[in-house]
Image 1: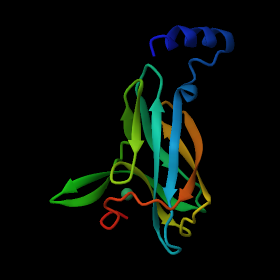
Image 2 (image 1 turned 180 degrees about the vertical axis):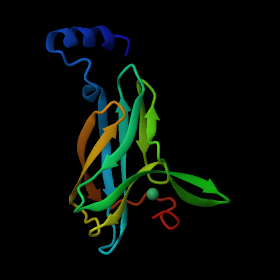
Image 3 (image 1 turned 135 degrees about the horizontal axis):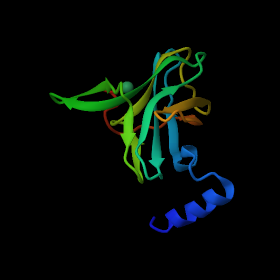
Amino acid sequence: MRLSFPVCLCLGLLFGVCTSALAQVSVSDGWARATFPMAKTGAIYLTLSNQSDSKLHLLSVKTPSDIAKEVQIHTTEMTDGMMRMRQLKNGIVIAPHSEHEFVPGGDHIMLIGLSKGLEKGTRIPLTLLFADGVEHEINVEVKHQDSGMGTKSHH
Ligand SMILES: [Cu+2]
């Protein structure tokens, strides 16, 4: 980690890419949970990694309107023994050199108003919008995967 800074500076001087926030954000382990055909909501999970020296603020997420009407960032909270979802209207801030996991039973990206259910094997395009104006395009595969926790009370 310590070594990456001078290396990055050199690359930045050579190629002018170092200051690009895009190069310092990576998304991994993205997947969407398959739903039944008439489902109106779906959940997406991924790991967002901030390799930069500054905070990364994920403001919102978009998907084409033929997939879902709206995308929200949700967290899951335990209230009186019940798992409940709450929208994070201000998005999520990720500290420098750390990552944020969106996982079943925790924070997740929620598709609201699906035009059709999420079918295993298809891919969902998403645009992640950051507070510095950078947009990051990804697409995630729809999988059948049970988290083994809270599937009845959550989605
Ligand atoms: Cu949710």
